[in-house]
Length: 115
Image (cartoon, rainbow, N blue to C red; front, side):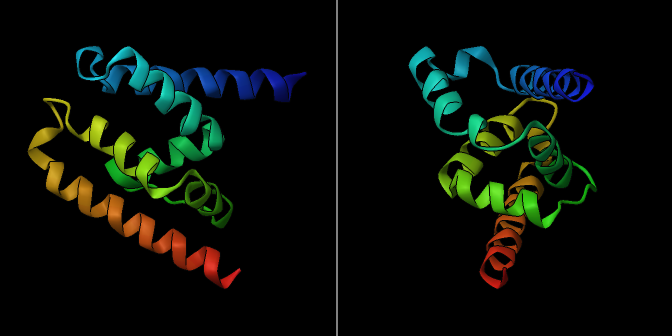
């Protein structure tokens, strides 16, 4: 029961972070639903937070999360990171975030190929 509650709490945090960082006016309703259905549900909430931590901070990512990220597919990864990095308080460092996004993708692809 505790694990289930913890996972639900983590999922809520991820959804709240995405909603906070993704301006509602920039995502059409249909596009947001497609993004949710095809991207966010493919990775665990912990991995989503780890990915955000790596790109927007100094976080680390496990090999297991790398596998989830690669399964999510690059278009989902790029789109989600682009939406977050386009926020007014983050846009000044957007180039850095997009480089970190691409570096993370390259790292995760290499991890999945060696496994």
